[in-house]
Length: 63
Image (cartoon, rainbow, N blue to C red; front, side, top):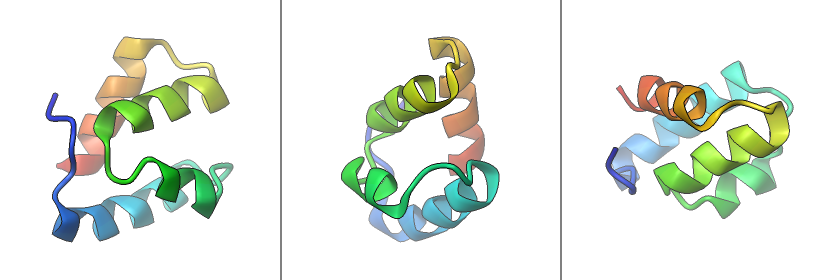
């Protein structure tokens, strides 16, 4: 998985994150700065997802 989400795509991904994972705060999302691995960690921490599942979720958001 690529670790950084392209800046132009990041705006779209943030919107999808807010829709799909509504418990995440804007600050938490912004703190990841478009880093896929940080997003994976955030989903694991907040939602108790396994690493593989969190990676799949982030990949789906970036397509």
